Length: 240
Image 1: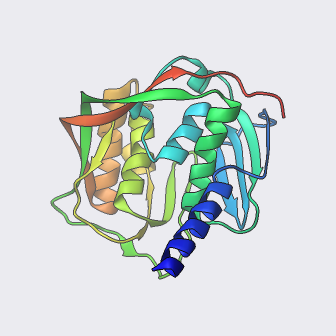
Image 2 (image 1 turned 30 degrees about the vertical axis):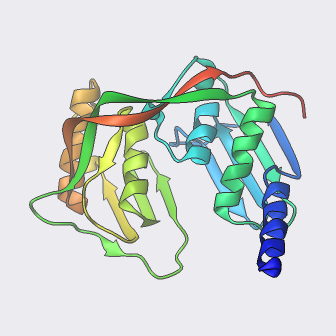
């Protein structure tokens, strides 16, 4: 029993030591990342690099929420940053996210509280045609990339895809596909786009036609009780 208690104490000490990055550099963005409203986020062993990201982007990545679930001042999206952060040694992605939470509090002064709100939302469901997705290979790295006319995705869960679509729609999207695991897929808007969408309703129509025709999924309007992060305080990044 004493050994187990000692191991627990040692583990808690390691967890505490890894709660913050060993070093982090935050600078105004150097260049725009094309076709990506959330910029670019990359992970290497012990290193996190984010380019052309907003504070809201960092919050979404660190807390696993969609843009519509983050409510607060314009500063959340009005400034864009390049961030390079390093841990002491190799840590998990979840540990990196925990460190990003600490960085948001320490360097951006982030403070928030949580509420539940009923919001207009969408359900991501399987279309009548059935899903047109390819199971990802075991161990395949999660990846997605936008272009001017579509998206390529590798090893995404349906919840991750719902989160991605939620940023485009600016409403929460709830995964109701019932499809477990990770999937590869791609879709192009070109043949569904007769003219440039004039508003969010036009865009939703084109997106839905594309999703159903290309990958056998669809978005359905609804309302859901959703967890919301209400930002009480946030500042521009403190000096490096």
